[in-house]
Image (cartoon, rainbow, N blue to C red; front, side):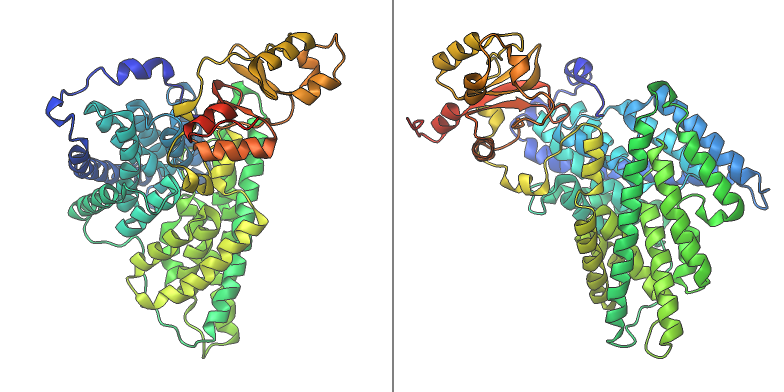
Length: 574
């Protein structure tokens, strides 16, 4: 669930603000300046995150370490970070991408400094200990949190604090992946869900600034050392299509396993939450006893695979083991993301397909490393569902235009298969498991103009579940409506229709008439007036409850057909 900050946000948003009265009417200019500041601060923080994780890992796994460390260290790391997350930093749980979207669409861009600090510490411990997760997703939440804190510190309005969240996210990803263009695209494609967003200027500035900070401190070292790519024969494109199918199926298996395991862990008693991460640490430790390459994100071994130096059996084994280990680590509550593991899985699948192809057609196929490189983007497109970002990301890693066409073919096939076999994208599904209903990309495209929050009646009364049929009938006649919301104490129980009143027994109460178990028609404050009218038509109602995205039973207000038509200057039909 999103972090509960409603009790503290009003005071914390004003306490400690800087007085920028001169900028009151020039917040657009201030946003540009802050995007540069955010780029620098986030870049420095991500560099520190990477160095801290590396130093901790070197101490936990010294050269020539004994095999028992590969079991004990990840188990202990999961135990320590799990307790810290449960006891002190509940807002730092998860990968970081869904939490960033929660902040953007539900919390007015609010991410606390405590969450930023907790994410940095807990992820450093878990990733350094060998948990099979990645640093990129957590970096996004850290970057977005820093941007949120800076925006509030400078006294920006909530809408401008929200505008800085994707700015911080792009800056973090640019530094974590060393891919500034892909960072911009991901921030727009996944975080905002709008490639035409007006924030593109500030997002580009922060991404470029953060990338320059990374190069200033760590040099121009690519994330992977990729050999020169060459398409040996046009017939290879058919093999890349096969790779797209394999990557898509592997992606679906990964996502379905992760979501099902997460449901299972969430059903366990609440008091076990702090120790649940140990399940992931112990599993990856036991696997790592026999196959050390499964430990951690595995970028070192990906480098080896990209050079074409890996046996086929090992590639297949590692792909299967990572598809199992990462969902268990993530679903059990360990801190870390799925970006890095998805690249690892893709490299193993791609390397395996390339090895078979090169064995069958040695004269007309490239080195298996080329297929591993394309496979990285293929799995990323299938798991994360950002096909454009995945193409540009691999292109930035290679800086070789020749790889674009094979990437597009393989990525789009993987993306298509993933959509067909797992309809709900992974981050949207994770949000639904938390009870949060984020706007879909299609819904965000429709949002604009008059919003429901601008026209809703915040004080409209609900009918009580204990009310009688006669009382409800009189209310309907007074209001001139055909449907109304039933509930009490700010909680929606369901919708009552006039036909239900007519069919009910005279002595019945409303709680006996309405369907409390099914999902009722509703809208959110950020939906457009047009979307509200469409949902009224679909639900055959003339009133809709306006509910929270974090809790569909929490009433924010009501919007009526009469009120919506009045917005457009139209009288309600008689």
